[in-house]
Length: 71
Image 1: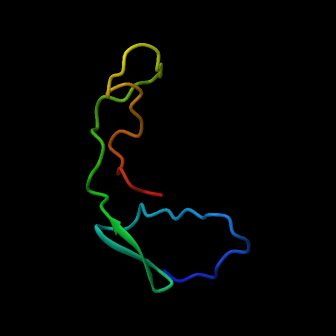
Image 2: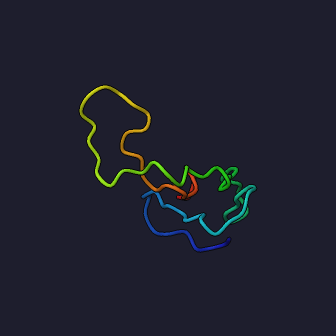
């Protein structure tokens, strides 16, 4: 993609949700590789979230079935 640089020094976020696997380029500069195929599991998301108690990697899962990289 090519676009005019926004004013200021604030960071910007690009939505890469519509891209396939590969390398992303902006204004002729590589911004790195993008792998949307690594999706989070469809099941396991919680309707509520509570971080209290012992650590568990399955606590507070969000965006199930969505790519792990997008913005």
